[in-house]
Image (tube, rainbow over all chains, first blue to last red; front, side):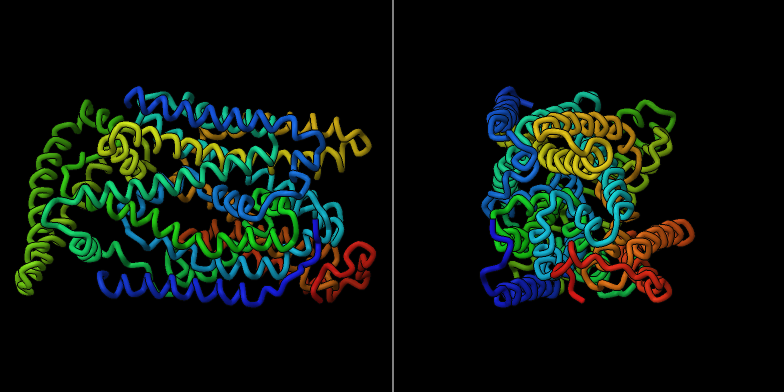
Amino acid sequence: MSDESTRNWTRTYLAVIAIEILTLAGLWLLQRHYGT
Amino acid sequence: MHLLDWAVVAAYVGWLIWDGVKRTKLESTTESYFLANRSMPWWAVGLSVMATQLSAITLVGTTGQGYNDGLRFVQFYYGLPIAMIILCVTLVPFFYRARVYTAYEYLERRFDLKTRTFTSGLFLVSRAMSCGAIAAAPAVVLSVVLGWSVTLTTLLILVPAVIYTMLGGVQAVTWTDVKTMSLTVFALVIAMVFLVMGLPSGVGVDDALTIAGGTGRLNAFDFRFTLTETYTFWSGMLGGLFLMLSYFGCDQSQVQRYLTAKSVDDGRTSLLMSAFWKIPLQVLVLIVGVFTFLFYLFNQPPLLFNPVHEERVRVSAVAPVYEGLQREFQSTFAARRQAAIDIAAARHAGDVREQARATDDFSRQDAALRSIRTRAIGLVRQTTDDASFNDVNYVFPTWITTALPIGIVGLWIAAIITAATDSIAAELNSLSTASVIDFYKRLIRPNDTDAHYLLVSRFATGFWGVFAGVIAVYASSLGPLIEVVNRFGSFFYGSILGVFMLAILTRRVTGTGAFVGLVAGMSSVAAVAYFRPEISFLWHNVIGAVVVVAVGLTLSLFYTDVRLKPDTTAGTNLG
């Protein structure tokens, strides 16, 4: 088992944030289009 | 249920137990029993992390919430991806470097024995209680749906979990999680297909979404900033963030999952799987609930979904009142159904005025139906003394057993049973780890053989299984199922998170400072819960963590015997 990280995680973390923003944007559009 | 459905359930549960028992021979040391020799692939660990949270409560209670309230519950998870990133940067590498079995073991190295013992003890109490609640939730629902006693359905859920966890340890737990997670997602997709196919002719998916949206069921954002509402954007982003940090970073039932990963990178990747998939998965579960609402918009539902309670009302003194409500319900249902069909027809014809009229009519009838159901539930509470009765938990199981074809019903019942079994198995495994590593081996019998600790670990797993069974019987009367589990944890979670924050953010705080801070944090949460019960439990996590950090840091300014432990914590904190 390796206790030390062997890769750069910054891009992965940015991808997580980007996916969350896209998911929330999708939900927001669903609410805007169909919601009250 | 048809014989074929029972065969599906028996085959699946039997397979899980057989696979768990098969792994017994792999578990010859405590490290393999508790941590799979830190050798699990990231994707299996990631699915295990997700499966541990996706209990039967999610399948039964959350679909019910989707039916009743729509998507707004998803706001609870908005802070989760950010929490996962913070944990990947902070606690995950700390735990790996420290090579601990439990999260609390790290606290002794950083602070002292009493802080470790107290936090581990809090985990044991809260997790053992919630383990009972996780068993009780589906046991109560299944007992009504299947017509069995609660004791029998509790055993149906607990016995497989205890057997394969006792024998197969964390490997059995993880690989069972992988299977059940796959089955659950498959079952949700199948349910969605049947629900869409169940829409009447002339009503398309777009029409259905318009109708559901008109009732507010597609609203996934509430931007009001209020401490009394649990499901708002801000409570999810802030309160939810603290809850997820605490749950995934300081709760042994989750920490143990990613400690089994091959490397610190695999541990991080497994956690980030939840960051990517948790919100979409939760939306899928809630959308299934919304489409169940649409199904019962066009197909006559019972006034009450719980047949046992309905029968008790029918033979009580208020039976004439209930029959009156039933007649009112049927006529209002027919009027609402017609209004929904009128909305779809007006949309297709492009008649905006007719659509607006039909929408107004629909909203009026929908409100009237809600009022009738509320009155019916009031009659149940009045006649059965079950003040917490919540019919919403019976909606989806009723749909499963009455609307799905033979075989798929069995698949779904298997998914519900094993979703509960899996969550409980993961918790039993972590309860056993904390009790053996943090108490038995540390305080009671420190110098025995590994074979002895392995035997005690299996025994501890069985003990916690029995304990959960006893709690399950009482937990069923504590309130809406979905909130019972979260309430247990919220009294401790934020405060324990505060201790870990002190541990990694600063080297100035002493063990005594952290311990006093922990007690102060828990006392503050208890005081808020008692004097301001209207404040949502999600904010308890924020309050607990902030008080612990503030008190811990303040005390460290006045203590002159600031004691560092550089030999064991060097390189394991940030400041």
